[in-house]
Length: 121
Length: 130
Image 1: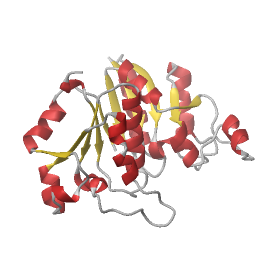
Image 2: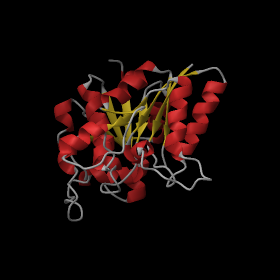
Image 3: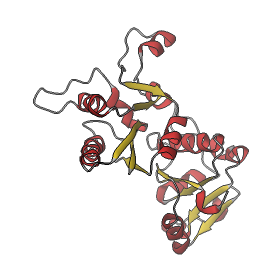
């Protein structure tokens, strides 16, 4: 599938902020199960979902990191974070799970300007 | 043009469903087609038949139902997001041993795959969320 046809799922909420992350990842997994090539973009607080040192949430909240770890099994290997997001949150790429690649502002703009389905969570 | 709507905001908590309804009416008034509406995240609350706003306020569920009756627009509700939030059909209530249900036709419980199908069938999928 051509890169411009990637299904783009954008995560903008931190883990345990309502169920945005969980339900966003569910949508990404279903798209992948339907044979779509899925790219995940973690913007703003959404990037916190990728922090590898994170624990389970408050009592009763399931951890979300195991879902991030199993994305590769669904052939979702495009995990992107804007450089700007890392700067704003003051976190380094080394704090995130393996396989995350950074995007410049120009690359983020290019993702949005290409004709592709986008879901925002 | 064929439009699809993704509604992820709860009625009366979030302006998203109201905006989505107004957009739906505008799309149809301009002669475009509305392929379907998919309710996900907190948007599933739009389907609750127990919704009882004061009589001088718009009943959002009835407004969606009217949209379906006038224009045949399917109203699909994500089953996982709905069950998690206590929005259940008669069949699901029986399956889970609940004594009541609050989701009825024309709303339909369905899987997330239906959202992808909607996205593929329309030219534009517009998201309404907070």
